[in-house]
Length: 128
Image 1 (cartoon, rainbow, N blue to C red):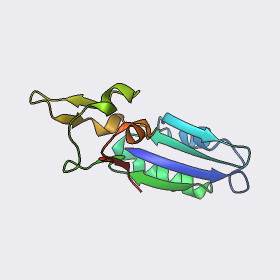
Image 2: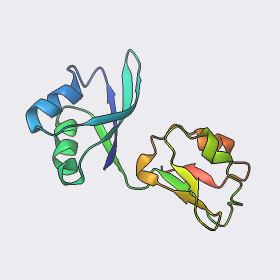
Image 3: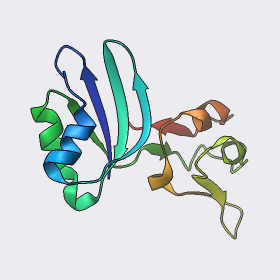
């Protein structure tokens, strides 16, 4: 399950991911991170059965955690199956199926936003 973890240095004073791994024993895959001197956002992937305990521990340490069920939203009514998103995606989220319709492998998405910028019809957006 994908989790977006946001934190500020004022609230979180220790290496939060390392602490959660040590305390829970759950392995965390960091898919994307933006770390600034005073704050940060980290997109992590954890096993579904461990998401609840990881969320609780992160929150206990002062972070804000959001569960991302569908990271990328695909408006099939707006999509013209042009494939502009396929070549720009670094995670191979997009492909064509046997009928040349756009197909998405949503769990691969790391929320980079490149596909949204590339889509000429505005058929792609990020979950809020």
